[in-house]
Image 1 (cartoon, rainbow, N blue to C red):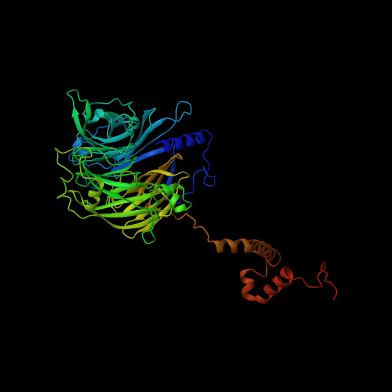
Image 2: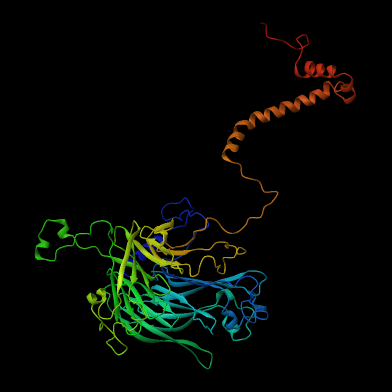
Length: 595
């Protein structure tokens, strides 16, 4: 967090004296991005991003059981929102990003921005409506956010968990306006696009913990918070609604998972919600029991070529400080495990992405050999010691002590430079990798190749978010009728350079440009070259021909009319040749150069 805060302060100082330039500007200018991918300019550095989405229903299908009477209109005077049951099936796309790093002196506020787009059920055809919400986080920076919606949502809002300082806050982002979900009448002057977020609850993870990463599982309403001190805190979210309609979320602390020695970089729940996968800056990825907090496995990541010789290990003796051998004096490189994720719906595959502060980054695939249902109670029972009471790291790695047995299947280089942000697609197929050089790579796990790479940022990428649904399922705002529609973005990226990138594997938009008879085709390079060469001689030929035609009718009008031509063609030819095109040497006023 200290390094991130320094970068934010540096960028804020640049922002005060920076003016956005065009595509051909210098380093801090907006880079040239080939469409349909694009980069949006922001007003503050971004350190966290999340993307939640549910696809729009197919055309012709209603968004709910009573969509004939429940319609959504942007005009507040005739607005009547669907019931929560109908709103459950409405397509939603929510992108939230947080950051800042400023103060009252710099004028750069710490904030959280939410862009939400939902299906417009009352509009004819396929349409969507969008709005933006701004949430101030005060003097504290927000580093981690996660958006979700419970399977049976009776409140008609998307939940947004934010890690701000030592606190974790939950906001409710209404899909529709609050009064409409309760069936009340709203004032026509209310601006739908300025609807504020609702703070549903908050908690303090611990003094000096430093909440930085958050994730959620809907199977048991559980939130995991990764902290700067290496601790993972697990909470159960309990939603309550009072008699007066007030909605709140209470945090019920379950356990603290201890084992990491440095800051947590990434968190991921097991697909069945029973385990928590974490990675940190200590070079390891770990699996904890979500109920007891007992450690189940430790995966030590490496960042050297698996086909090459292993790096030399420094000696741990007194002579290591006096020897002149550089291999003995060299400290081991710090390994940062930037990302971790389960790679299938059964939790049998685990992926980690690690790199040092310099050098290449490596993707490692781990295989869980012990069936997870047999190891659900591994590492202790509910009555066992919650913190550190499980087996030690040596027993965990060897698979003894009732822990998971995890095998390293392969390790492959995924980037020639260190990776600073990672996100895995919802179909476990594509990794979105953000590097310290500002590049974004879409890496295919199966082929182990980079599908596409973009240069979108001037500073290291701070956060990535992959598409929440498959690219074949359109999200609201991606329909071809929308202004910026026709493109299914595969990943989002952000950085401290005040930019938000949207990246896609599409080569062009799905929008079909209507053909028009008046539209002219752009000439090719050869056609332009030939036209530039021959246009002047062609113009002179046309002028001479026009003068000759005029003189023919003025001088030889009687000989070239239709009746004269039919009777005597030779007379017309002689007149045109001798009187118009070529003058006879005996003609008055004609002088030839002597031979």
